[in-house]
Length: 156
Image (tube, rainbow, N blue to C red; front, side, top):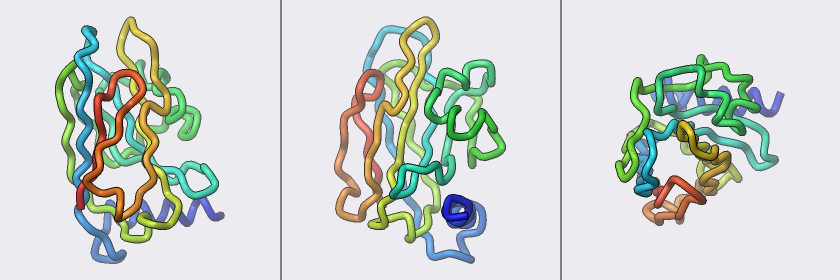
């Protein structure tokens, strides 16, 4: 029940921002120049206990590769209906993905964590490439990724 409430809060903030206090948040993911094909990226949120709360965005349009976003895939069963936005393109090496979404104020300073899973064809998958607590104090502070993400930051 608790995870359903978190998912509802997240979904309401994304789909119906007038019903929940929300703010525009810009998510910026800069990739390293890893020398391979475009990366598939899933951005999703977990609650304070680590339970899946909802998906925010996915870069990469071919569903056959979604299983390589293994932590996201395990949490969702690969259900793309849970993703607020899916782009048709993966993100190229050395490029930057910048998106702006309305996120519920309730997600900040309440123990929620934003995660990024990344995968590149013919290269190693990188589950939990980035995990950053959603806090108002953390806005604007870039954090490094583990393999394909050079840096990730969110700004309000």
